[in-house]
Length: 126
Figure (cartoon, rainbow, N blue to C red):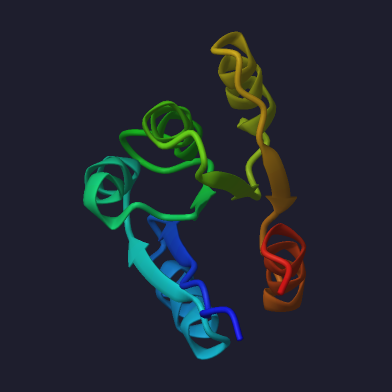
């Protein structure tokens, strides 16, 4: 039987309850998930945490989720990126990312855990 591959997920949201709740849900279903509360923290921690997937809110104070995603995608090209947002400003931020040659999948906020789990199952089939 092949070994179970540990999948590390890094979640960034400046709303701590959301980040912590998503991490708890993902940890319960078998992922190794860690929550951070800013784009800057995500970039810093990703260098040694080496996530398989980065899930982030788009609009955060300081570094946006898109800026963090661009940074992570350059440093960790195999890391999958999934963004979520409930803000109207998201379109202009996504256009900025495209200017850097990056496109990212985005989910509408609030993200229902079932929708997120389905995306992860598609990304990491058993």
